[in-house]
Length: 277
Image (cartoon, rainbow, N blue to C red; front, side):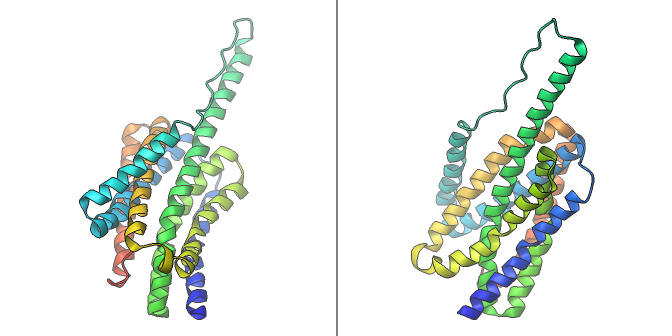
């Protein structure tokens, strides 16, 4: 058991660290303009929607049936709809008095607009990091179960996860880098979202067999899918529309969905049927 645990930790770290590679691709380049940021937000929204509907909710439907899976899903939607009411909105720009010079007034308005945009983008980046962390958590569980089948199975699964985690690292790091202008903060948050995978190994190795039934786990992950869907549609898509325009953003969303769908397909065919995910 100790060997299997350490093997699971090592393989999940391999998959989780690939989010850091995605972050490096962001921070080695100059800060993106708003249109590029909007396109990447649309792409990230596509990733999030695919994870929600094609992975988490799909698995909940298979495990729990239509009614129970939908109850869990909408429980997550309602929960975060209520929570979002208590999240403070960025303050509106303060009015500029007429006796101020036009240049000064314009500068202050521009600063207020930029601060508002940065706060919106920062919130979007944090939302993406949380959603991807929750998605990576069961991937760590799958890596651990795969490693119990053997090193080859665990290694193949870990490499498959690592490949599709790279764009997830980009999706987290880009808005954080834009909002904070800090390469370290962008790299740190993207890397932390990847380390949800070894955390999943620790949880399943220590707690899962005795304290959490598979049915409850699938239900909770279905609720996570509802949370991710709500946050994507409520926060990320409006931001993408503002910065890149609706038409370009929708194209970016479907590109993200197509990429994640293909990634999930190759990930699932690399997992033995009796493991699931």
